[in-house]
Length: 170
Image 1 (cartoon, helix red, strand yellow):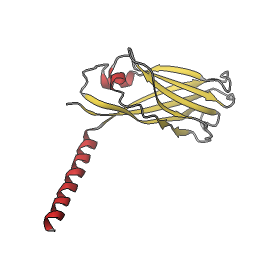
Image 2 (cartoon, one colour):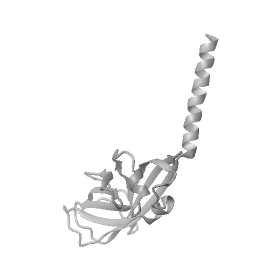
Image 3 (cartoon, one colour):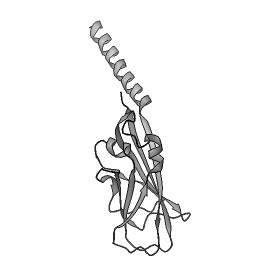
Image 4 (cartoon, one colour):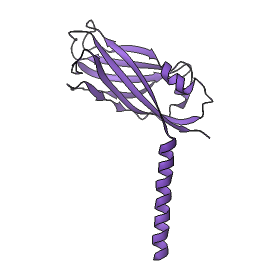
């Protein structure tokens, strides 16, 4: 009985240690961009805005030999950057896609049937598998597609904040 308890304690400690080590070596890489929603954007029509992710390229260097692997989207959030006190109530849906030179576009996050009067919202993450090929290639592009319920009364600036996570490659 004593050996079983001792073995269980050692196994538990080993599992906790492995999880701690992995969380210490796991990296998170941020990406942010702003999307202008002008007053002329019609309701009930999908509109697209594209940005090149230069700050993510700084982390990875557009380098397929970067010593990272298992890159995934770990967080996607939108928030009203301006006007001050604005909210997301005009939005019907938001979708975020990523691609790069030589790769297909992949949907990484979205939210439909939005009924949110707050100034920020976490998007639902899509299980797209690993994004290594996309983020390690040059020319990473993030495309934001949105649809409004009704036209806005003034221009809005929406901040899109993404976090990618990875672990070191051997």
